[in-house]
Image (cartoon, rainbow, N blue to C red; front, side):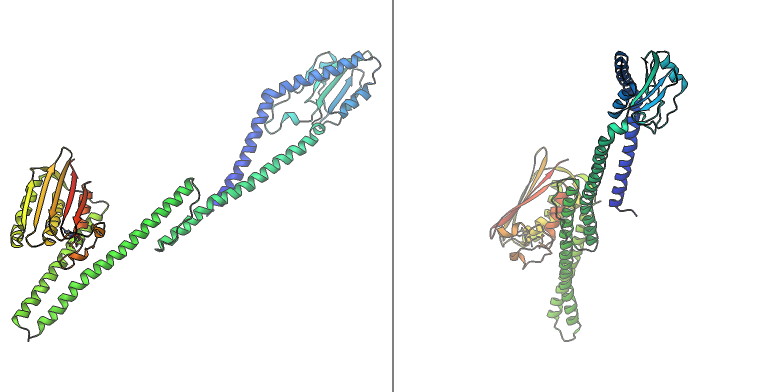
Length: 457
Ligand code: ADP
């Protein structure tokens, strides 16, 4: 498997090679299509200047003049009708000139060798030092017809520029390559760290947080990863706490049941003790049963794929039936119950909402005072239904209010009463499930009120 770093290097080098080849092709095509003709014209003009000078200077030493011009950067081939043939300013790579070229100039015409130089994909005509890649111009010298074939001496003209250009290109290539390798390392390092951190998380080690300094996509990825790690850390902590709470809450009733069953086996216990013990066992069994039901309900509510079984039902009827169910207990406890429930049809999960009202009503009863009261008010607007459960019970301390909806949380003052600490957690989940909200206000020693808002669909 190639690492990301290796892939980056290979891709970069391939891209550099590819761009050099494509660049070469494009430049070459441009030369053949545009520059070649202009180059030909320019060199013809230069050659004509030279021949004009030769023709207008009677006692000119032609060879001396042309070899001087050769030294400043031109290659010449001079032919005369009498058979004169001489090179100046450096040799050509191939010095075979087709006879037709000579004939052209001897007839007084211009030879456009540069313009007509054939297109070659892998060869830049500009640099090709062949005699057919010249321009030829006729001239008369000492009464005889001559022709001069000329092209710039690229080797001479470009020798320094060549070196400078080559140095520039090579140093650019090396510096950009080193730069890219460095940048690639910098880019890939956080990914390597991320991979390491992921491995640690798979081993349930959540302490590793990535240092995020960057603000780019990788920085965003690292900070999302950190957020995820914190979330997992929290989930892991609450899962452990939940398991320990569940184990504890199951353990104590089970120990009680075990202990009292042992005692029941003894033949010497009185009838009164037997009744006490069996009633304790019964209470503990009920507690275990309630705990199991509530845990199952919470597990259901925790499922990401859970779905509400919505249906339209008479909310007022549901509440009144519930009140009827607890009426004997309410009367038995000497508690006054008031209710003001408007006739309301609501579209929601009837079963889950019944659990909510049940929890709130039994809490209002359980944590009430002798001769206390409970008030239930249900109202609606066009968009929402508002439900209040108000009691004149023991109340909740200010600092305990924020924990009320946590699983297994029980306020100190209520510990003498039976309870699991799961009821309000379920209430909150169900209300959230209906996209509603729940709020509590309480005065310690005076009473508590739960306010629920449920949006209508
Ligand atoms: P529990 O089974 O203990 O009643 P809940 O989740 O229903 O569990 O309630 C959590 C805690 O909130 C209770 O233990 C109690 O301390 C407090 N609480 C709930 N309702 C009331 C209320 N109406 N009055 C006073 N305290 C309450």
